Image 1: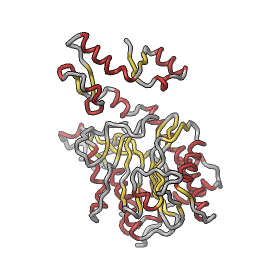
Image 2: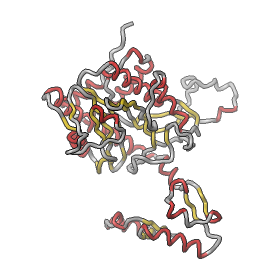
Image 3: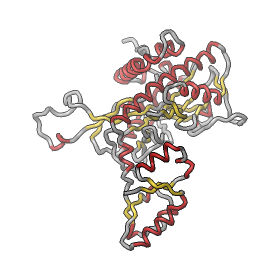
Image 4: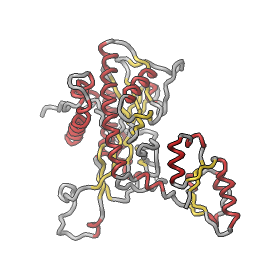
Length: 400
C-alpha cells in the first residue's frame, strides 16, 4: 500500500522529513496535480469512488467528482486528531505549564514597566517581549498565531494586529486596559490564551463587564454534560450573565485546538451556530473564551483551553440518582472539563457583589492549581515568582 501526499514540495524538503515519508511509502506530488489525478482515477473505472468531505473541500476538486462516485463523509483522520491520545494530552498539559511560566515573567516585566518605571509600552513591544519570554521555554518553536495585543479601543477589534507605523497603534499606560490573545507552539503542545489586564484604576462599568465575562467562562468550565452533546448546547452558559443585562458578543465561545498542530482545529466547537452538530468527546480540547466589546472604548475576553474528561463514578457528588434506582440512562457516560491554561485571572477587576460563593471558590481553586503547577518553574524571590504569588492569593471575600 502507498499514500500520495499533495503539497508544496518545499514543506517536505528537509532530509529527515523526506526519509520518514519514504519509509512509510508516501509519494509526494505537487499540490496542483490533485485534480488531474482524481480525474484519472475516476476515468480508469466508472465504479471507482472518491472519499471527500464536501463541507471542507475546495470547489476545484469537488466539481470533478460525479455524485454517483462521491463518498461525502468526514475525513477519517479528523476525529483521530480531535480526540488526543495519552501522549498528546500529556504534551498539551506540559505546554500550558511552561506557557504559564512565560506569562509570569512577562507580566512581572509589564507591571514594572508601567507601574514602577511609569512609562508607556506599545502594542508591538508587548508582542515582542511576550514572544521573547515564550522563546525561552524548552521546546518552543514559534507563536501559534499572530499575537493580538489591543490597548483601549483596539481591544474591541476581535482580530486586531498591531503594526509599527499604523495609525491604530496604541501605547499601554495606567489609564487603559489591554486585551492580549496569544499562544505558543511547542514541540509537545499548542497553547492559546486570552487575558484582559488593567494596571490602573478601572471604571465600575469595566469591572462589571469583566466580572460577567468571567462568570460566563466559569459557567462553561463547570458544566457536566452527557456524552454525544453537541457544542452549541453549552454556548448559552457562556452568555447567560451578559444576556441578563441585554448584552452579547459576536463570536463563538470555543474552538477545537490541535496537539502541536493547528491552533484552530475542527470538527467541534462551542458557538450559537446550530449547524455544527459535532458532539463533544473525551480527549478533545476546546477553548472557552466569552467576551464583551464596547466599540471605541475597550474589549474584554477571558480564554482558557480545556480538555474533555469523563466524570468519575461518584454518583452523589455528580447529582445522579443512587445506584439502586434502575434507570434507562444509567449506562450513559457523562463528561466535564479539566483546565489546561495555567495563567492567573486579575482579581482586582472582579466585582465580588455579583459573584456567587461557588464562583469565588472556583477562582481560588483555579489559582491554587496554577501556583502548584507553575511555581516549580520559577526562581524563588524572582519578579516572576513574586508576581505569581500575589496573583494566586485567595480573593478577598465580602464580610458577612
